[in-house]
Structure formats: C-alpha cells, structure tokens
View 1 (cartoon, helix red, strand yellow):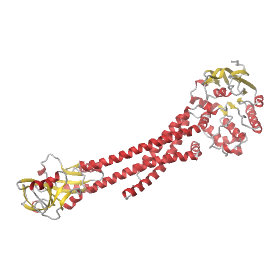
View 2 (cartoon, chains in turn orange, yellow; view 1 turned 135 degrees about the vertical axis):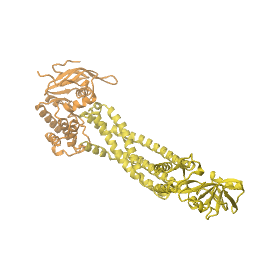
View 3 (spheres, chains in turn orange, red; view 1 turned 90 degrees about the horizontal axis):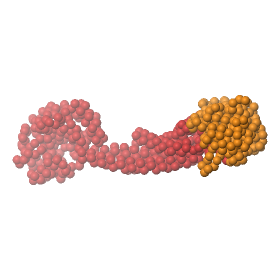
View 4 (spheres, helix red, strand yellow; view 1 turned 180 degrees about the horizontal axis):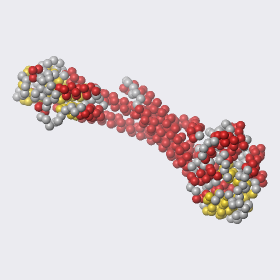
Length: 227
Length: 380
C-alpha cells in the first residue's frame, strides 16, 4: 500500500463555549483516493476540512499532507502550502463579485505564481464554462458559479482537492454536472476529500468517513480508530 | 492582474467609493485652501507692511569705527543700491551729523524727503514735511525742549564743517521712537556743496539707511547675506517692532489655520476609518477567500493599502483642484485679488489625503487580517 497523502492522528478541535468540534479523530487517505466525509450538520465535517487545508489549527493531534505537518506552519507558510498543493471548493462558491469568471480563475494563478490566461481559459472550458468566461458571478447560475469555483481550485494543478458541500446549493442537473467533473478528476488520479450530505455523491466516492458529534464513526481507513 | 483587481475592486461599490472620495476631497480641499490662503495672506501682509514703511536699517560696518568718522565710499553705496535693486528693496540714504541749536547738541538728518516719506508713512506730522531746501521737520521731543513750533525758525551751527544756517520749521514729527530727538532736512541742505566729496560721506557725517525689504525677516536675512557676499561694509538690522507685528499677525493666522487643519484631519480620519472598517467587514469573505486561495498576509495588506492609497491620491488631486478654486474665490472676495494655486498646497493636500487614507486603510487591513478565514468561509 502506498504511503498516505493525508494523515490525521488524534485530532481534537474545540470552539469557544466548550463546543467540541472534533474529538480525537484519526484517519488516513491514500493518493488518488476519493473520500466522502459524511455526517449530520455540526458533526465536524467542515472543521476537519479546515484543518486539512491549513485555514484552522487543531488544539491537539497532528494533521499531515504529503508528510508536511500543517500545525507547524505559520499562517503565511500555510497559505503558500495551500496554493501549491490544495484546491478548495466551497458550497457558497465565494467568487469575487467584481471579477469575471476567467479573472476569478486567474486570481488563484496570480497568488500562486503568475497569470496564464490561456491556461485559465482551458480549465474553464474543461468544466464547460468557456462561453461564460467573461461573465461576472452575478450573471451566472449557481451551477455555473460552482463550476467556476472548481476551475479556480484546479488551475494550479493541486494534489488534493477539498470540497465542502459542493452540491449543497445546486439543483439536480447541476449536481450531476459536478459529479461528472469529480469523476473525471478522480479518473485522472486526483485525491478528493468531499464533505457532503448528498448520499449519491457519497456513493460515488471510494470511501465514506462518517463523523458523529466530532467523533469518527466509520471509514477512517487503516490508521483509523474511533475516538 | 494586480492593477486589474485593484481598479475593479476600487470601482466595485460606487456609493462607497464616492463617499470616501468626497470625504478625502473635502479634507484635502480644506488643506489646499488653508495652505494657499496662508501663503497668500503671508505675501499680502508682507506687502502691506512694506507699504507701511521700512522694516530694516542699514549702517556702516564695522561698528567699532567712530560713527562720525565712518567714511562710506560712494562706490559702496552704488554697489549697495545695485544689490537693493536686485532684491526689490526700497532704500533711503540718511546722513546724520551733529549741529548746535541754542547751545544744545542736536542730531540733524538729511535725506531725500520724497523717499523718506515713502518709507515712513507711519510718522504723524503736525504741519508738513519739508519740500524745499531750507525747510526742516523737527522731532517732537526736540521741539518741546527748544520750544519750536511749526512756522518757526531754527538757528544751527555745525561742530564740523559747514556754515551756520537758519532753517524754517515745516512740521513737528511724532514717531514714538528716537527720531523724535532729531531734525530732518531735505537732502544736502545741511551742508554746503563745497564740503561734499564725490567718493565719501562728508566729514563729520554718519551715513545710514532705512530699508523696506520684501519677504519679512527671511527676506531681510537673504538681503543681508547678499550684502555680506558682496563684501560691502554695511550691516543690515531688522526693525524689530515692524517685523514683530508682521510675525505676530502671521503666527496667529497660521495658528488658526493649523488648529482648523487638525480639526479637519481628525474628523476625516475618524469618519474615514469608520467607513473603511465597515467596508472591510463587508468584504471580509472576499479577503478570506484571497487567503484561502493562497494569498499571504503581506499580499492582502499590499492590496488593501494600495486600494486606500489610490483613493487617497484621487481625493488629494480632486481636493487640490477644489481647494485652489476656493482659495481663488476667497481671495477675490476678501482681498479683491485671488490667491493663485501653489505647489506647496498640491504637495500638502495630496500628501495628507494619501496619508489619511493609508492610515484608515491600515486600520481596516489590521481588522481584515485578524479575521479567521475558516470561520468566514464555512458553509453552515
């Protein structure tokens, strides 16, 4: 078995007010794996994703991606790590409202290294958004905005894609479109971690990790153990 | 890409942009108005004081020479007049000698009475100034001591060269200073032409001059430096009471402007900082997104500060134009002549507008960087 690309070991995260968002969670994900994080609202899916992308820090435990311990990185080192290796997809898309679809994709290139317009356009075309490249987010439907968000996540060729409820705001037709994109990414060998309530999306993934009140219930992988 | 993001982000919320620009424009317009009007007023006050008369004295140097023996070569006076012409300085040459009236020593000053009148408009005269040779203006203290009145005569004999003369009193002078102890005569009536030498002051005379130097104290210092630079044997001393008056008025004007300026800056800073922080909070998701896609804190800071600087620059330029126009208008209304735009006003209004905007932007930036992106970007 290849060494895991993502490892979490004994991860605990508390929020102010005594809310235990994650309680001693351990798991590992192999390269190229598609993992669905499932569980009820408040079970800790988003918190776990935020620890995996380095936007937040665990109170205890270790989170590693490609052997790099994220908890040891400064906020700026985390930003650099994220732009080099991680693509983020959000439920609410979070497109910059005054930039066109193409410019939103180029924004990730800009903060990564340098802007490559043809490459950004190619990525947009690969998610079926080529014809809408010059449109501002408010002129795009939810599904189109999500596809732009996915294109932005992919443009720097990340090794890991972390998606938080990517179909949460989409109708069925757009959901299918996103599923299709994820299937293609998985086929290309990308590692996908998708937090979702969507059972269909969960079924498409290779493994489901279930969280319940911050504890791992199932699917933690070879290194998993319930907290 | 940076500039594209910067311009699009700046223009994204027109209402917010217009409000910020209006605030900055108002602030920098007042700065431009104060600076332009302040400098204009300084120029006008200096001009007014110049019209009021002399503001400096020039005397032979070195001072240790016995005054009555100080011989000033005509060539030096000619060179001095050339320097004075360059600095647009009005100069009247005064020659002081001691005469005896009714057994008392009295200082007699001869001068071109037309020029002297131009530099001493503040003198109060009972009667009139002498217009022809043979007339004299008697200082009030001498007049009291010698019981002289307008229309009377003065019999004078000279210590040194010169024949005794009878002078007619054309007026009594009240100046409030040592000039009240002197008698003023039309030029060169105090001694016979045979005594004058073309290359020097007549014997027994102490030659000095009254000056009206444009530019107040700094103008006097520049003129004095130029005189020293020409190695001329003169020393320039400001007449303190005139300069003090000028300085006091200017200082009070500047103090008033400075206080008003601080009030304007403080209000602008408060208003703008509140607006920027509120706008930053509105945009906290956008900023969090930038950090999520890999922007380092310094990149976000540069972006936010550049945006603030851009607004500051726009407000500064608009403010300079508006403030200069206001200064022109105010000058026309108050002084019947506008204050022209000044480079100093451009520098001050532009610089302060950018500085105020950057300060407010800095406060917003600190607030934005304190936010936790993971909280702002979460889906629940």
